[in-house]
Structures are given as C-alpha cells and as structure tokens.
Length: 300
Length: 299
Image (cartoon, rainbow over all chains, first blue to last red; front, side, top):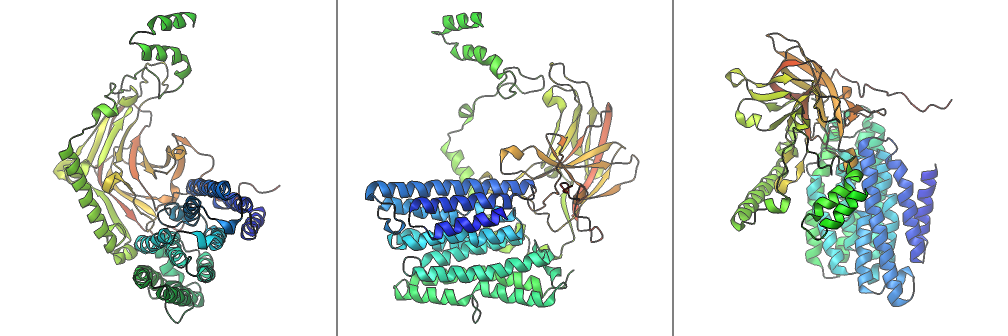
C-alpha cells in the first residue's frame, strides 16, 4: 500500500510540477517506491533487477538534475518549459532516454522486467514511463530533432529485432515497449499531443496484456500454448489485444500509428515515416507469433 | 613497528620502495587473500603483469577481428533462424535435448577439471575418453589431507565443469533451459556420491559465488544408470554454504554445469558420463522442493 501510494504521489508531483526540483523529487519518489515491489520475492534475479533499476534511474536522475542546474545557471530560471541552453537539452534528452529505456540506453529494461512479477512489469512499462514522457512533452519545443529521431528509429529497429527470438514473455513485452517508445518519440517534436495519445493507447493495450498474462500465470511461450484451455474467451481477447498492440487495422492500436505517419508525412519526413513503418513489421512478426502460440496451437 | 619504519626510511631512496610498502602494509592486508604475498603451495607462480602479456601485433589483432566479425555474422544469421539458432517449431515441440555428449577430444575440451591442488591439496583428477570413445571418464584419487599452510582446515575435492559459452567479442552467452524441468544424465559411477552444480552467472559480483546444487548418488557396477534430477530439487548455496532463504533456479539464463566429488573419503574415484541432457517430464509438477510455506506468518 505504501509503495502504491508513493508511486501515485511521485507521478502526481512530477506531472504537476513547474519547477525542475519538484519534477526531480517526483521521479526519485517513484524510483524508491518501485524498488520494494521489484525485489519483493527476494529471489537473486529479482534483487539483480532492482539493483539494475536503481543504478540506471539514479544515474538518469543525476543527469536530469545536472541538466536543470546548467539551464538555471545560464538562463537564471528553473521553469521546466523554459529549457533553452543546448547542452541542457541534450543532457535532458539523455536522462529521459535512460529513464524510458530508449536505445541506446535500453539494456536494463528487459532484464529488469524479467526479474519482476507481472504486476510490477505492468507498473514499470506504464506508470513509471508517464512522468518522463510528461517531461518530454513539456520540453518538446527545445529538444534536438535529429537526436530524437535517431533514437526513435533505433528503438523501433532494436525493439523489433531483439524481440524476434525471445522465449520469455516479459522480455518480449519489454522489447515491444522499446519499439512503441520509438513511435512515441519520433513524433514528439512535431506533435507532442500525438506522443501522449500513443502513450495512453499503448498503456491501455499493454495493461490488458499484462493482466491477461497474470491471470493465466504465463511466463514463457511454451506455457502459453496450453493456456487457452483455461479460459478460452480470455484467450480470444488476448489475441485481439496482441494484434491491436501490433498496430493492425481496424483495431485501436492502428490509430496512433496512422496519425503519426500522417503527421510525419505532413512535415515532409516521408523517408522517416516509411522507415519506422517497415521496422514495425519486425514487431508484427513476434506479436503474430505470440497470438499464434496462444490460440492456434495444440499442446504437444 | 619502529624497526619497520626505520628500515623503510633507509630504503626510501633505493629501488625497494614497493617491498617497503608491502612490509608496512603487510599487517593490514594479512587478512585479505587477494593481496597476501604468501603463495599457496598449489598456486601458480606469479605471472607477468597484464601489460607485459599484451601482444601489440597488428596482424594478429586483425585476424582476431576477422574471426570475431565472422562469429557476429553467424550469430546474426542464427538470430533469424530462431532461439539459440534452432527453428522456433523445434523449441516449441522439443521435450528432450542432449546438451553434452562425449565422443571425441573436442567434446572433452569443452570441460575444465580442477581439484584441491589449487589450494595445496594432494588429490588428483584426470579426464579422458572412455573405451570405444563412448563417453567421458573422470577419474583420479581423492586425498583429504589438508595443506599445511596454517589457514586451510579442510581439503579433498575434485571437480569437472563445463566452460562457459562465449559469443562474438567474448560476450557471455547463456543456455535457455526454460522448456525443461529435469536434468537427465547417463552415467556409470563407482558408488560414490557426487554433487551436481549449476551456475547462473549473475550480473553483480556480490552474487558471483551463488551456485545451485543437488546430489547424484551413483551405483557401482557394470550397468549404466539413467539419473533424472528435477530442477525443482536444486538448492541455493553461496561459497559452499547452503543458504537459509531458498529460491528455485531460474532456467532462462544458465551459464555452466559441473560435477564435484568431496565425500571426505580418501581413495580412487571414477565416473563415466555418456551424455548429459534435458527432459521435460510432464509427470513432474513440483515447482520447488524447499520451504514453499509462508515463513513470516503473523502470530
């Protein structure tokens, strides 16, 4: 209860703050609140996951604080929306990327998710990403478009590529999260509202996935093959939700992708739009494989 | 202490400054095995430092780079095929897998043998192919006589351990045994008990001594045994001590497997291993054998 309340508190503080200090305080509260949840089982791998999470998030928070201090030194103010100094912008982008798990700072994310329970994974993939994305939203006019675009394309590519051969479902969902973050980041400069829309829809869809996996107690693909016998209607919903996450029309998950491609094309970034669309095919491959294992297979 | 200080003052201008430092710091470092100047009887003599060993040959470096790049290319191609380079359908449908099979010297080279000679003991261990190249023969003599160094109280162990897998650019690679729930061994022992050790190679160094162990009791005799050890039976130990809080082994990131004999009985030992494999025993439903009850129930 304390951890959950602290998570809510930390998230609320960050998303409602105007001052960099308060934003940092909210992020730190979030980090500290989730650590007991990750390490609850005291399994050596859970301890490893919580240690990795703490180290990466602490480093990111330090960078964020340094970025805000540098900006305050040069511009004389601590307002989040007035991030003007170029070095501060780059440092902030790096800090938020580490927080979110954007490539090339993604290495901790699959391991941390693998060491946590399904419910904690859900929190890590949704709630813990909300404050950093809010900070990105607030500072989007000042950020470097080239850097963000490169990180976004790389995230979509690596998220799809690394998710191809995963047999552990939590790691698959971690790479799916990385790929979706790529989509959210690529449109941040041009239409921040679309980033938030994509994030909300991703949160709703992935929450459904995590809840279903928690109900069927499925941790790996081979277990998923036998899970359909437990609750067949749930398996049908699972399949549809997975396809929605993959971005197939006419499901809801297609909407943010469509709007992002439309916006990118309007901005004259057709090549970027084509690249990220083609890279999402990698993700589609493993989503279809999950859907296939969950629904169309019989146990050996 | 005063004499040591006087000595150090006299030697200060000389070339023996580092020895002086060691003398001064000796009492401070005597409890640390890492910095002790005492070399155990079984330990190898001091090697050259790392920088002295470095080979700055450009041609050799280029060859190594070519080898690593070809390994990387092979890994990328395997990534397209499926998990661990095998098709996905094979992963989903398999219920047995042979991990190590001993038919040639190359198979033996994937294993390392060690004994208490490293700490100054007198046990002997050897590994060779058994008759008709139909298995590996691990044999030797166990000697429980402790080395006379004033520190070691116990001795007498021999072990055989699989070498950890390395990918391109010497990155660690792990086995994914999550599809299976039992270890399957075809062995022919001499009646002595062995310990099977599984190492999961954790990321942080404070867990580097964690090992999952279980016992393998062999029968002596001419017949081969097929021993199945469920992974749910493996218990967690650290630096040889069984831990109070037990956790089941997670099979998605396994580094090495090993066998150890240390039953405190002097004399020869012998273990023949045909193959080591994995089995998904559908009849075995136990998740973990130790302390699944709630340990902190409120009174």
